[in-house]
View 1 (tube, rainbow, N blue to C red):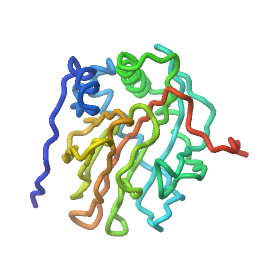
View 2: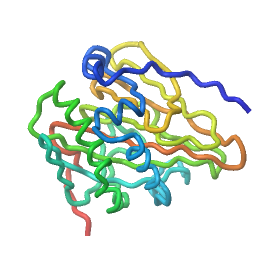
View 3: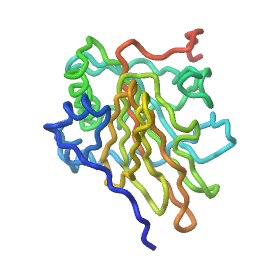
View 4: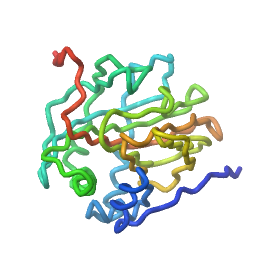
Length: 252
């Protein structure tokens, strides 16, 4: 069975910063991701193994069981990457009407991935790109490993719908698509009606957005056979500290 997908326009590493500045978004191939991260493509692709066995997301308010994830937080200053103590993921209802306003304590990213040089290089590589566009002392970074599956017939990558994340920049990496249809990416200009739709299919290709300018969502996925899934990595970069609950509660 052949599923038609819309191919996204790709931007080279050399033009990444200028295109992101002018358009508010870019889509880059895995080769470009490897180039800006200064890692080999095989080392980059080897990270995909760490998406097996992700724990189920217990916070879905639509009653779904289709999302699995892990979470980590970092501070980046120049070439220095600092993993901060495990913390809750929190968004205000202004940015996430479905799951905003609550502290979500996801399971942490596992140590073998945290210590992988290619993983660290991806985080630093994007920080260097963003620092050219917006020079800051510290980037506050959140990393989310996601698997969306079709065990219940349908999986929703963005159950909250089209949204912004309340950060400076967002990077959405497509790691794998297995026996699914759907999962189309849709982005819109936050100040107008301009939009673009496409489907990321190449492992480790990425959509990078200026979150202040762009709204984004991904359409639901359905299985082509009995079961399918879609793996992604979402990295958010914020210059004004982490988003925290007003209570600033700590994990017990």
